[in-house]
Length: 438
Image (cartoon, rainbow, N blue to C red; front, side, top):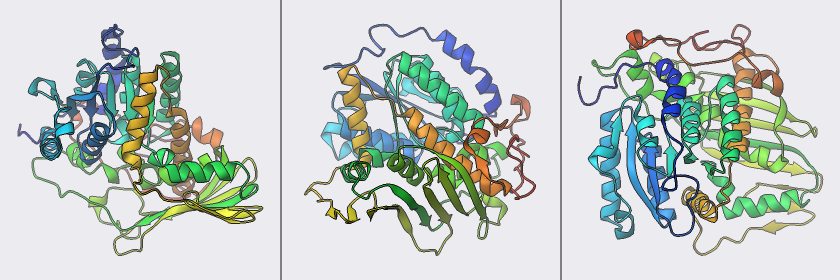
């Protein structure tokens, strides 16, 4: 096996080992558990060493004092090596960050059980940045072991995953564990101040809005001869719903999270359309490249959602809300009866860094916050929109939350390498209650 080959072990197999592995991890004592506050060093491990995991590790090291990065884990050895090289480069240009880099060779783990090894390596806080399809499993294992968590968004890709995450949220609350999730807008002063004003009545009752993430194409990796079907899918995880949830879930969840934040609620119904106009080549898996979804909230408010990833297309990312007394972009201005503009400070905080600063600060107080439920609801909002477009049917919140939907590939360790590509979803044919290949 080359050093770039992912070992042929099934996701289903390691999902089934989670409970046993968690039971084998003793509840951490005074050296590792939720006691961490004050001046104690917080030891950080990263699970998922791609671009986002590497970036999140750097953001944590920039944003928090008294932390040390001590462990790394990834499916693929080459991704882990690239992460170490990038972090070393960052440390070479910043002495403060260099002093926090404490990763040794014996704390670098690869393979499908790498997440278990990182969790069990003496860390206090884990950063979860593997493809989203793995998030429910990794969250459950980290919380069972008594670890604080910073999780990238989204937190699941299907109904079964959301139910798992909501159960993990309750366990984390009971254990007083901190969980931050990578919805950085909730840690940006411009969004915070503007939305506080909206919720204080600055534009009256919110009755409608638009949220959008329209952009060009994203990366894809050409298949190498030595890669199995599974490795090819995992290395191109964006294009497979069992790994990414489709781009409405993986990316557009940011804007949908803002809508839920503004309205202080999640939608109750969704109707949508979507398709693949550019991504017709099999290398793009089976996901869509555009969606448009109409969300209805219990208050009667309607939010129109748009997202697109097509090369050569214009970019537009943001939010806009209309109330009975005015309008707002949720991040910088209010127009109407009480106009207002956010005053940008001379040094504008970076939301990607601030979310780590805030999480670590809350852990040190002994009263860590837990963002998992709100982002689980925003993730389910995105799944709800996806399913409205995939099936061509109106979706309700309760129907999606309780659906018999599990996109996990049902394969065993011996045949994991041969992994078919599920069909492109077809409105009128695709069902909400389905497994990964239906």
